[in-house]
Image 1 (tube, one colour):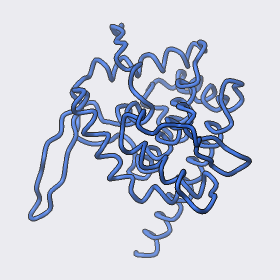
Image 2 (image 1 turned 180 degrees about the vertical axis):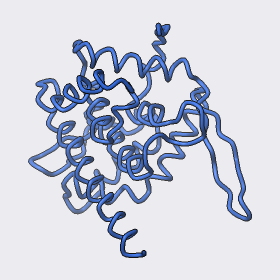
Image 3 (image 1 turned 60 degrees about the vertical axis):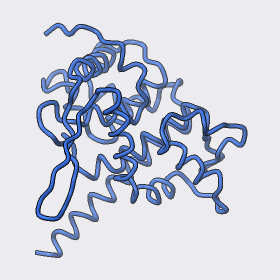
Length: 235
């Protein structure tokens, strides 16, 4: 199926693209688990900060760039995490920061959802069950969604040259096991999975981006294992 290319997705940041890809195209839910959304979004924010040169790795420790102006960041979620790193009295590695900040991922997610609503990417419906209020998001701009999926599938499947932002997003897709969003075809998936596994070896991937992707994978594995153990114990 030929999809008309829409360049709007090129202006979105990693966090917006991650949530857009994770959104079910027809239903008001995500196509990946809540754990993958939680850690994937925090990782996406770190990737955005890395691409903006707001943070770097000094050995294993995350360092905020003292000369970086957080006012240049579009979302408050980015600014909050940057300031948390910048103002921290204790140096922490990436794994520690991801675990520390994942607890407020839901709040961060809502900030991005509101921003994506203003860009007409999604629509938000306010629901209520008994006394509990909650939000349900639906994909609104299917053209941008399909164009983004098509673009990522095309550059991966046909091994086209990728920039660091594209490599970062593809690494995040691999870390959060989102490969099937790009294709459902078995033969295509085999190629896509192989390509995504090799992203870390690409010389254009910075140390911070590579480490972020690896730590997201590690954090998700631990979270899934913990959740599985807790479920088994409750039975």
